[in-house]
Amino acid sequence: MLNEKKERIIMGIDPGTAVMGYGVILEKGNKTELISLGVVKMTHLDDPFLKLQRIFEKTIVLIDQYKPDVLAIEAPFYGKNIQVLLKLGRAQGIAIAAALSRSISVTEYSPRKIKQSITGNGNATKEQVAAMLQRLLNFKETPEFLDATDGLAVAVCHSFQKITSGGKSKTYSGWESFVSDNKTKVKGLAVKAKK
Image 1 (cartoon, rainbow, N blue to C red):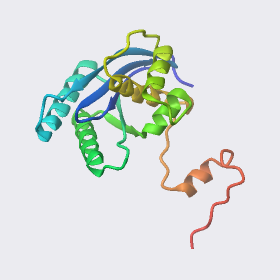
Image 2: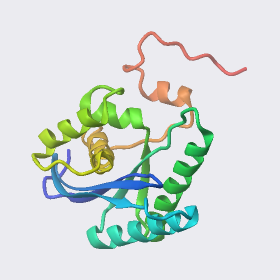
Image 3: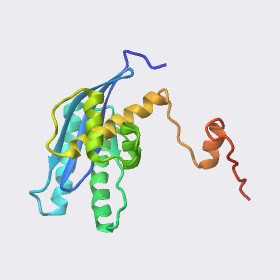
């Protein structure tokens, strides 16, 4: 059981090369409070490497300001344009490098996982995610960019994973090891033995 006095600060980042959204929450036991949310704009920069430099520097500033215990980050998703995926991957990698340079652990979540954990629907819109976060964290102001609530959603998603799993986290090397540890969750599924 989670100790009520235990607190941790979670920073969530929605990486982007035009606008990077972030959110910071304080987790006290099984309660969550909003500390901050906002965006880092890079629309005024033309050079892609200067954008990456700004992402790194602003992420370091945010980490130094809020002193998070963990950074949760949204994974890039693949659409039809591989160039967009490459740019998002670079932005994500730079934010991760900034966190690691400050010895902050990093956890990555897919966009679908984040939406699912916040709204119960993996296909929810940005507006639906923002509205649910306003209810969950009891804030009224609407951010100028939905990237801010997207960053906040990543932090809240990370908090929900800990709360719902009792604070325990396990990594599996494959489907077989997951099934063997979670027989009650995967009833009726047979695991094929490796030949």
